[in-house]
Length: 317
Image (cartoon, rainbow, N blue to C red):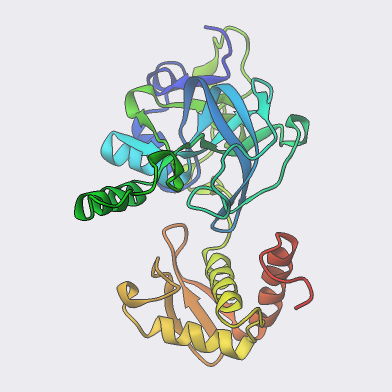
């Protein structure tokens, strides 16, 4: 067997002695994400910024795609996952379809928050955030309303069907556990296998590292995402005024006192409690996390700076 860029789960056990249950553990601990080979299709390549997706260009791509940590876990739990949001493993197989925004529906919308045109060469060489290209069609709600008008008032003429407002319909791809694989790059980064000889004859002796010592996948802080959501919503609701640290702290205290289902901002229920000196929070990624109140102001400043660079907050505020 020659060295390959990715391996099916049964190959990992056969050639490296890595059982599927070990891969599942790594996935559940967010140390590893599942990948899949996908035939040529159109994707919108872009950037993930906090909870938003910013489109850069439309590409044709055939090759390895990697799922998010959450979707990788769902593949093991349910046997499959339907998703539209993934990562293109390598820029090399991609070809540019267009740098222009491909829809008539204005953004921000339910598909992209913004559009920042980029050439193919300006995209990262590896791990490009992407979405399956959405379809644009007549809004079903508008079509139903128009049909109701025509039925209720037959003497009047409703809006012509072709002139009805359009909307974007995100498309999903189903990925099943049977086709799951892990890339050679990810295995090497976790030091689960050595650099392989061409025939992999000594793979069973490959140096490994205890699972508990392996690093988790890096990701944005869930608390940072929550603070960004508070800053953005406050900016829109209060005519662009920035929220102060004291006001933000009051929001966090209020949210933590409510049940997760009743929270306006913390819909994921990460907040545990807020004291005079500390903010305590947890997530699926890591439990028992905390932020000192004295550091809240500097954390908010960093998030504001990022949001301003994205044009989400007025740079003059």
